[in-house]
Image (cartoon, rainbow, N blue to C red; front, side, top):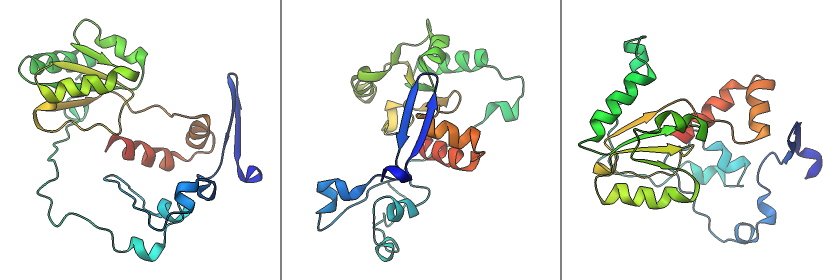
Length: 199
């Protein structure tokens, strides 16, 4: 496996990454009679074959909802496209006003970006504080909540979050991802990863 891995070195360390998870060494997966792959946002299901060894024939018949009735409705607005003068200050004022009546969530890519919301956010959730904070949102009105670099795996149904603002895109999580995106010019792969995380 090691000869096929990618190795990236920067000023802070070394990262070695296999091209995909070596499923044959994960005993629970390698010995399983059945495997269930669950996802709501997989943009490219070929990774189930290449990375997880799924049977491509089986992937042609996924189990899916009969109707879209259970799926949430989203309206995505890009204020900067409508008004190039729209600024972060405008967004803060809008989110703060909205959060007086309903829960509003802002997702930022880093702790540094979260500092810009200090003083107006009712809660900043990062690391181990995220789960308890999300539970509070589901239970009632909290106000304006800032999530730090948590784009995926967040479930905020109905009144838990009525307005969600994404302030900048998620940062690459690994050295290998950063090299793929910037050094190798694979912006498409990086963009697909970001889209999947945000969905």
